[in-house]
Image (cartoon, rainbow, N blue to C red; front, side, top):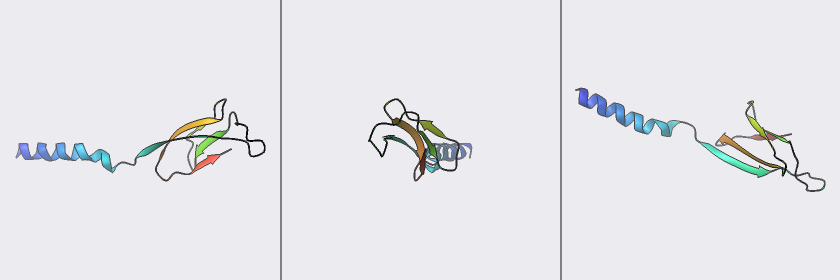
Length: 74
């Protein structure tokens, strides 16, 4: 009985991670609509959260987000 219980526990443990939401890495560049220059220090937030990042000197950003997330730029 203990062997079966242990086997079931290990099975659930091995496959439980697939039920969690998967994150993806999103990268991009924020540029000015007026002259197409990169925007330094623009904020990129996940809508409805306080999770975010800022663009670097070249306007690049990188953020991890759950699938189907909405990004807010400002």
